[in-house]
Amino acid sequence: MGNISQLFSAMRSSSSGLSAERTRIDVISRNIANAQTTSMPDGTGPYRRQVVHFAPILERTALGQLTASGVRVERVANDLATPFEIVHDPSHPDSDRDGNVHMPNVNTMKEMADLITAMRSYESNLKAQEGFFEMARQALRLAQ
Image 1 (cartoon, one colour):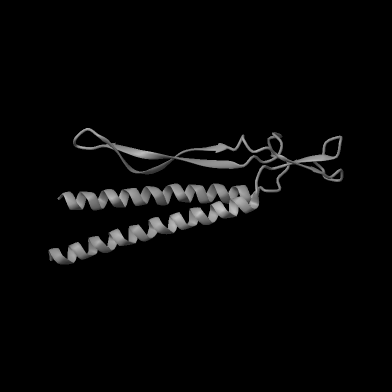
Image 2 (cartoon, one colour; image 1 turned 60 degrees about the vertical axis):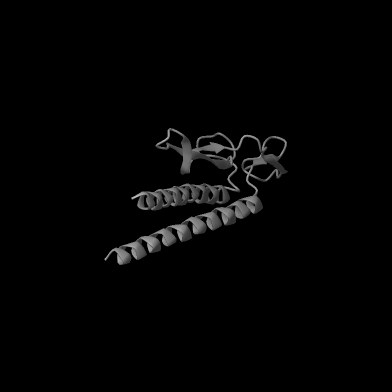
């Protein structure tokens, strides 16, 4: 029974990784889509890059110890540390009286690198999930 429990625990862990990375991919895609948005509809200025923060999913073992059993999205927060880029373009509709435009703090190259990393992590979790399913199929065949 313990092996089956471990198999399902590993599947849950992999599943949580899939869900967390999917959120990360969505946020990165939103960042890329808004890389040139200089004015938000609510009037708060240019788009501010968002970052996904992960946290471990902790479970208490039978012995009372905490152990990580996956990952979850703790929060999606605005990147307040990276400043907006200032571009001089007096013809831009969002330029200030000096002709400067505050551009989003989105570095498209960095976002693309993060997207590739997130996609690879997603694929790894998916392959692990497929491996767990195959092990379960083999176990069922052996039990017949």
